[in-house]
Image (tube, rainbow, N blue to C red):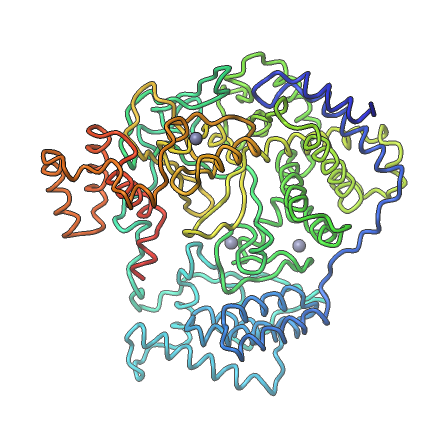
Length: 637
Ligand SMILES: [Zn+2]
Ligand SMILES: [Zn+2]
Ligand SMILES: [Zn+2]
């Protein structure tokens, strides 16, 4: 038996804990062994993807083709790529100018103005500026029309433009970079196309009322997001009506200690670490993951783009300064397949966050020694203050690894990815205080942090492969993946009593059914009985999460939604008394289809009176989910 296999087996057998702790020593031995082996044979040369004129022009031309064909959305994406690859100000200005044309035609006039402004600031060629300014003037006219301001209104155009630009364009406020009222005022651009000085504009008070009232989050404004019963003392991300429990059968899980009604907020939390999916690289902000048509590039790499100056600088400070050179080589690295690239990106991000960019390695090592000594599964990873903290390294490192149930091959693959991550961090960045040459790594015992960090990434692999949630800010659009520490404690059910939705990066879990004290609270791991047959669900849950699902939908083999609706499964239509009871709520809904309180009441009554599967429950549940997922908002605009 070879050493790696032996080490993996020791690791699996040695780890009888349900939570993440208890495998530090074995993990380090395994990753260390693989690292040593990897470093013996020469690695393929790392070719970083760089900004360059050729690609920038090629993407611009691709964009032009889409523009001619009338596909503005695709054209905008190509111009964004052209901008990301541009290696000087003039190339950037061309990308901005062309993007403004597609934005104008798409009737996104504010976005159009932002790009025109950037193009002019970046030295767009003199002979073409006139046309661009004309487009800008037309865009302002269009905005005036929308604001219903007469053409001869004495309002200062400059102020109007500022106001339009400062207004909320997407969910996340866009901070306009170059707007300062004087479009001719050029910014200084260095060789890399990087802009020196980052002015941020504030809303100018020019006396014009806003276009429309600030939109509520949902159709009826519920005020600021609040946990039902306030935050729990032990885990502030969950409601005080929830407790953390532990059992051999369920591992760590969440149990209600108070009653929740449909729609009540059970938990909400920001991600500990998150990444964007590669398919969304040039359409969504790499930091806040929002859809943006005015994406601006990372000054160094051609991969990362942001919705605003703010997101760009926050991302840089948080992790991108270290990730930037790694992302640049990843794409060209010996055909690393997509899943591996995604995992590598995730664990590098995790390591950067968990060690505070490498500054807290020693501190973390000490903290982990203490954490590994805690024999209590329920409180594993609790901080010194005795809480499970969404932003705390120990809490994040305590999540379930499913080590004992994982197949050997998967564990070995993760160890290899982690070793590769450690090599990239040490040779491409200053993470370990200095950039190492490959030769200097040969004797890894001289750099103990390397093995330790490799093992942290290995742990991140096993934790993240089981605990990450897909981030979905708009219905049906999956933009990225995040590790949500407290949310990871929810167990799975194919018919969960809660549902999730997002506000920005914040994941919110609400009760779908009435939940009573003593009930376990479940979420869905992407295998809902509604849309997936039982056999497929069982296979998926076993393959990805290594357990046999025994939820009510699985044990009683509930039919899927289409069957329930087609055959009116469990319908209450013949139950006159119940129909009568629900009548007033139905009338309220006929009057106002967004009367969400009526829907919640209907659900409360149905759950008390009938058992699932039931056609009417399916309808009401869908209604509640659609409301909070923002589907109605999209319908009404
Ligand atoms: Zn953003
Ligand atoms: Zn970058
Ligand atoms: Zn199930």
